[in-house]
Image 1 (cartoon, rainbow, N blue to C red):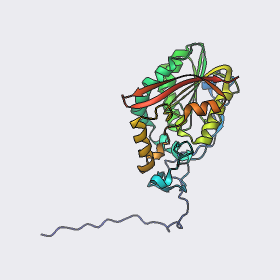
Image 2 (image 1 turned 90 degrees about the vertical axis):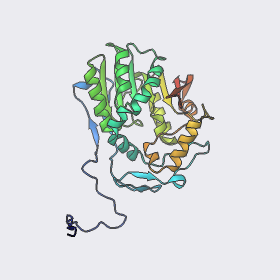
Image 3 (image 1 turned 135 degrees about the horizontal axis):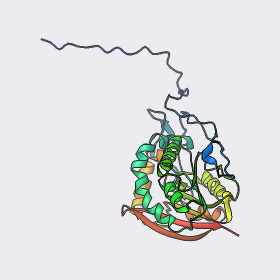
Image 4 (image 1 turned 45 degrees about the vertical axis):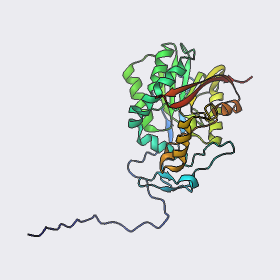
Length: 309
């Protein structure tokens, strides 16, 4: 007896879109316009400015990559990743693509990368005077470190988190809600280049594992915003990969090679940057630097700084 052959019937499709035309966003695409979070979660934050424009996560092919199956730009290797005069890798993926990647992978990130980052971030917090302080965490992610900040500032302090990925903001709010009201807290969807805090409102700004997501121009804008929201005696705390601090690191060399050549790797955005140089250029005095290793192989630089002058 021969095999019975079955025939699959496909759904009828409409006319094909013109070649090169932009594809419409899928149902999973999160489109964010002006955010107006004015609920009770911001009580006690007179300096909070919760009106932040977030870019739309629309699908658009990028000139330096190709559009992937779900609309995400895939790096095209050496031809798609350039280096600056100092050797720092550029970010070939637009900000909205990086944001979409972290929005889509927020749960996985919270279970894996955030746990790996936690120890060095807690160690960085140990270098700060936090009780009673108003602390802003830029790029708070799923809120693991922000929850620690809320615990350390205590009932007289304030802990504010900002992240560009809606799923990260939801995760951070849920984590803080589970821990209870240890301090006044708020988490906002926002852009690090336009921070939703009044000038001079923060005692401490933490930028942990986030500055390495930005290209040079955006990095300068983010650091200028950090300086704006800090008080004159405030402190900036940075945790990042600094290529100048550990130039002989085989891990960072391998990381940069993967960033250049592995398709899709650059979607995560982060890569080693000249952090100390960038912080100084933004008008800060660097007060201390130290190197830590994650899992015994991944070097990160922890630095603290204050507004110059």
